[in-house]
Length: 168
Length: 406
Image (cartoon, rainbow over all chains, first blue to last red):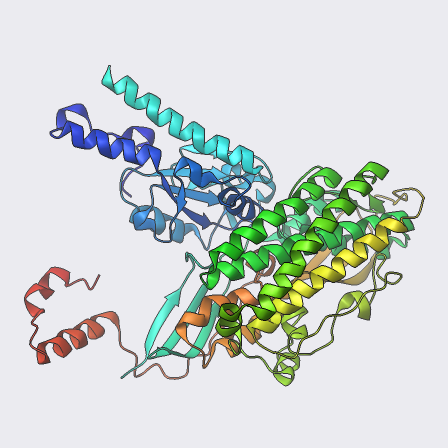
């Protein structure tokens, strides 16, 4: 499996930067407009409808440039909900591998973070981090749309901070 | 031209949940459809056997986030029957109230998703905006937007105050206004009618033969509603009509759902006007007497059935759930066959599938008939290269780059 370097993988290391201005532009674009792909790994639907709620007029995550995409190849952030069932385990790995670097995984909900109420069920392998590396956890059953927005904004904030640190 | 197999899912933009469909196409027409279930299988029924009845309420509630009240009420009705307790009428009324609010949120959610599937995103945004009003009510009444946790064995956990009743009535008035507009859109808007009429047909005979449930069956003219046929909670006392439609297609399923919204508002107003005084819960022993019970509940998607077997301890011996989507799945293959590929997402969406409800078991329905004439990806590539060659374009020079067929 490629990737798995977490937040650091967003940036190309300074010595490799031949076209610094171009990289800056790309990083800026990535941060201002992260495209997400949503994958339900065995969730009860509760988190999924809250994720969709955040994209609709009341909460409107699109004002942060977030757009939902249909193909993993177009997406920067994989938004997962639900505990990983044995049946979806291979699928989520495949979806993750199809995404281009840099990529991030956000686990929405308690089940996605740890397995939650389904811990110990025979069809469940655990939280998302038991299969692919996770950059941000948003707990709650299900998390309110405000919490999901907060999680996404915090992830973007931490990336921006990382960039500033690298400049120094 | 041979047949082509198109896989849809488990990760697919039109499906909010992981589910696989394998469609055999002849040109644009769907010849046969195979449903592949089980991606959402978590093993809840088995897990129920290791938890006490009270713990199970919260696990069962999380079978499905959209119809969580459905599952917890259905399960609790079984347990209450086994324990031989009768809940107070105030508790029954509150259960009915939350159940109808859930139906409103689910139907508005469906309307939005259906709009999205046919490329009418304005409708999607409108109905989800209005749905937030119901979500606010549910959050106010129960403390959570989804997975309300209002049920407990022997009654409900939270009361409804007179201020809350005022708020609910105000919101219901607003929603009623909006719903009238949606009924107008679904019955008169030319683009919607043209797009949905005649798509995914399911005749009355087929609906009965394939065991369709809920709005899918009612849109085919089958007057089947558990709330009327086998009343639970307060439905025996509440007057309402069972909505049916003669269209037998996706349009009919939409019309049935929006008209059911109007009935839900009626039920809520009736329940709130006549909310009886009384205790919220009755005492139920922790150990449930041995026995078996079955209970039915009209979920937004159709009839939900729970079976509980108790052995006299604090934990059930067996819990079995039959969710409405499973009842509707056999009709899905029937509806898809003979239709066009472009209609597949809306036909699937029209039963309002909820696979997290369904996937507690693995069922593979194989309807493939003719596998000999199938073209695999490489053969198809070779075919297209030859086709272009005949017309003077030679792509064979670059074919070595894509030997793997990707």
